[in-house]
Image 1 (spheres, rainbow, N blue to C red):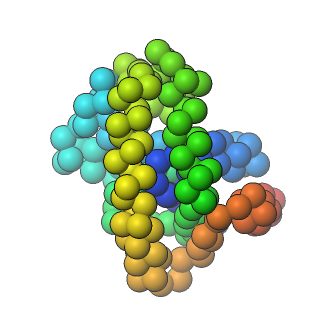
Image 2 (cartoon, rainbow, N blue to C red):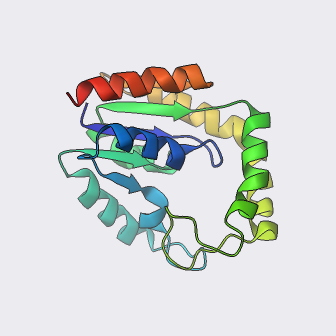
Image 3 (cartoon, helix red, strand yellow):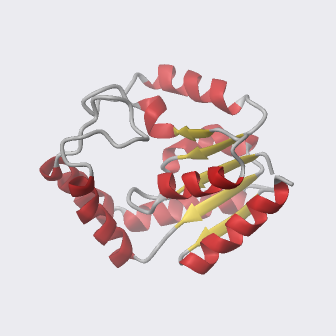
Length: 173
């Protein structure tokens, strides 16, 4: 395994888990999809520009790519493995509720400069995302079902995450 995608809805811990994988294999760079598709002030780059930047990143020989389900059509064909982070809704809701306070008035490390977390903006986004949980799950399940020869994990708990970490750490030896 040299190319792994970590996906799921927002608040599932994609960036955190990408950092955990990178700790085992420092030679494999982490690519944050939000850093590719965002400018400052939460403004999206033009789709053609972000698609080109993503294609350039996934052409590299090894990577850990983390981001929401919208990256899947672009990267799934290049990946060796996919990790779907899908914790219970209560866990995700708690993370979404506390995250803006952790980075209050600052930009999270995985984002481009100028994308500051303000709770009222993040809560509107979080509520919209929580309402779309079923749609996210259905889409990711369909993509995984259609991906031939791709090693996949559907992680709902810490034990599932540890299984992935063990497999990833073994491939770097």
